[in-house]
Image 1 (cartoon, rainbow, N blue to C red):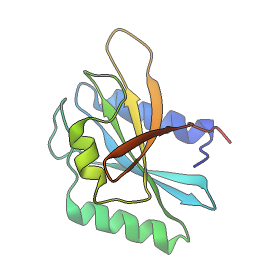
Image 2: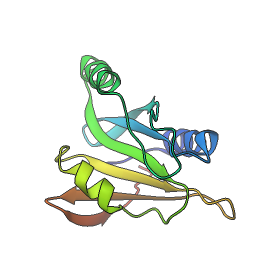
Image 3: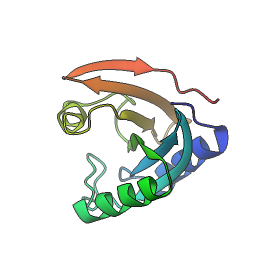
Length: 132
């Protein structure tokens, strides 16, 4: 997935705004290019995990598809650990094959770090965060 700097900045801003809790959301893509960011509400309101209401997910995916795009990535932040998939992330990814995982590492003592991953069958593969 290619994502321009403005959309990536929106994801980082969401992470900063929700800190100290994790943020979460979805990225719509068309032909491998990110076209929009859809913020979601972390109903867990936790610095350790995120949870999204199923109806909100369904509505967002419907909006994405109605607009001629598809779900390309799910994003969230890690506020107390490096931006690398946790076992919880790996377990959650099992229900979302083909979707990339964008994680914003947002610690109080430094600048945000953004990394992206494919997680298939429990195998984590880092992919480039392509500013194309």
